[in-house]
Image 1 (cartoon, helix red, strand yellow):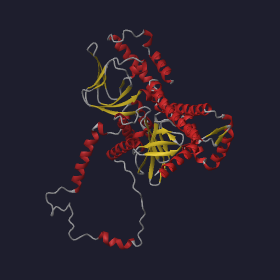
Image 2: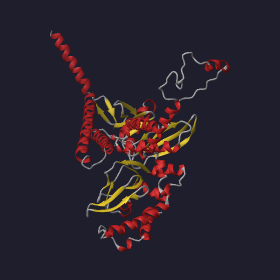
Image 3: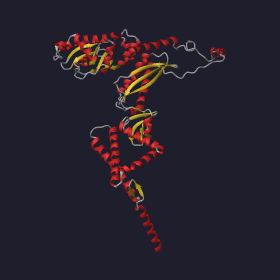
Image 4: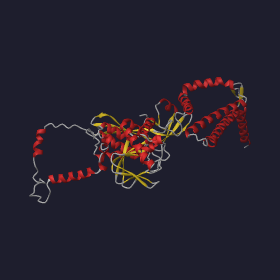
Length: 503
């Protein structure tokens, strides 16, 4: 037993001597294993302390400043690395190690990194570039080939991406620097989404445009990520193999919901196409018959149990084919008479300004506005509300009233317009407009009014003329007492339109 205790003490003394005896030269300083271990522990503690200080700075200083999440993470990471590096240098200097003597060691390590650790060095430098340039930041929604997701963290070696399927992907930083990356959140969160659409040959391009724009605008009103401004557009890409190639352009501000937005748009497009009888072409295959003459007898042969529906002997009380077709045509004609079922192109042609427009001009016009249905008795715009839309009556009648004086002002019919006064003069709505019967209106937003007036200058003249008349009528009713006298003439208003819209 004494011999065993003696051996343990000898072993302990030997280990203690091994750890405390200076045996390593770092520059001009001779260090023991224990001193090196202490330095390593202190350096690790410094890095943890630097990370804690960085987190505290983000919570206390950066968050109240209102910086974006990406800027907060970038500043925090850079601060953490600087504090950690400076802290380690201070520890080495305070331990008596001459830092200038480490340059030789750093050069040797640099050669080793260049040959054996080049991937790690590349990721390290790429990580620093990402943090300093901030072209990709934490919180950005990016696309790498077929991979889409939100950047969750950018470290020195890698970047963590959270995909739309809630999966986390670790991407080396060098990969982000060497490949093309689509950053949907860079500078402007608004981005253009392109939906390719193929329709069968023989489809009416104007109807296709109307259907696509109607689907896009209905989706925008549902607030699912599609923006109403900028307005959606339709491009005719070309003539494909067995189909017309169109493309719907919409702008979105929630790219992380890309799949849901596409799905909602596709559902809407299919519904609009089905209601208008627009066909989406199927893949076409050619069938060659080797002996078509042999099939004549098969198709010309009438089955023994075949009975003609027009045979009055078999069905004495059944209507004949001509009567059935006549009934169907009557129903179709009755349905077609309802303005709600007319195409927007036909409704616009009822307006004086657009009655001589070609189909191509009407297709362009449809991009400036959209059709909206209003039931009888509904208020379209309210007195004293800000003006944001211009309306052209396609079908039905509306009445203009003053709620301030409780007076009737006018009744507007097909082809007339309203809502221009608030837009052009920058004043609130001067009257309330209410439908007398079911109405179909062509609505033009403020941002698209300039394009419309540039395309149709005669409409600008007509608006100026009508506006001067309405201003005078409103003054007579005591609703425009503060309006200077010199603003009422036609030329003054026409000049204002030219100043506002450059036309």
